[in-house]
Image (cartoon, rainbow, N blue to C red; front, side, top):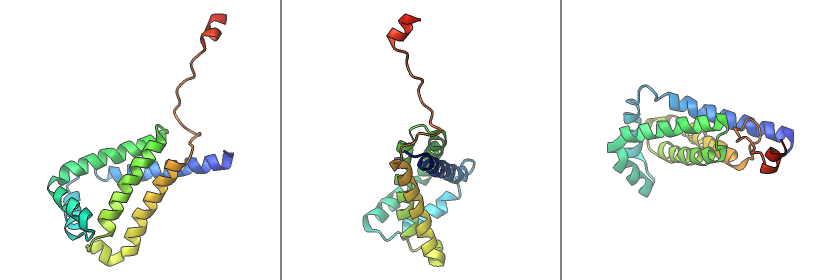
Length: 156
């Protein structure tokens, strides 16, 4: 892989990692504000099966918010540190796609005000995570130390 491509992959991975950490940090000390946001989106989602799933999970919004916050934090650190970045990209793409379906396809105040912005925000987050999933990450990755061969040890 050319050096410029490696730098581009690093920039995408780091920016996506900081994206997840920024949005996870919004809920690190207070998740109470998520309740109204989630229940409004669940109640007004117009995707048939997905909307029903959201409405059935609305009662457990606190558990859902804590799990998603922990997952977003883990994804952010994994991407920044280069620990299983493709796994982080895969899980990040799933979470971003879930946010896209939850908040872009509902009859909610934020969609009424600016639906294209909401849609493209979550859609671009999904694409960024898929880009991280696709790349071979060779720069700034935590790697295991190579093991010495027994013949090398014997000659020492």
